[in-house]
Image (cartoon, rainbow, N blue to C red; front, side, top):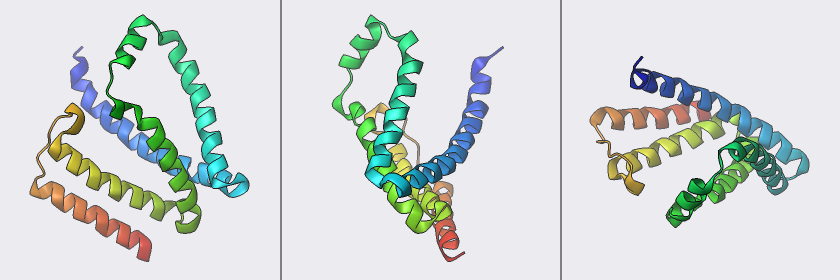
Length: 151
């Protein structure tokens, strides 16, 4: 069985699943934020997430993990900080805008940055050409945000 043959379709399914989870996550987190405060909810969400991540990673830790980790550039260490910022922003935005508009704005912003990143290939990522179809897709995504807003 050729594992590479299934990698792309499984990745597409995982991406759709992550998108579905995003809407649930931001709504649940924002609801918590309305009850205990946005910053406090951000802390609690990351505390629980850290505990879960520790359970996932403990069986996999070894000397090679720590060596590899120490060799990584500083920019790769910023993901946790950016995650806290993202959850905090969502905790503020979702109650004010609603889940659909907030998530559509997140996705549109993500598509814009992702397209720029794909074109420039930062951090050693593969470069992807910004074709006319991709530009049209970005414009349609932004049009979708406007339709959700004016819905």
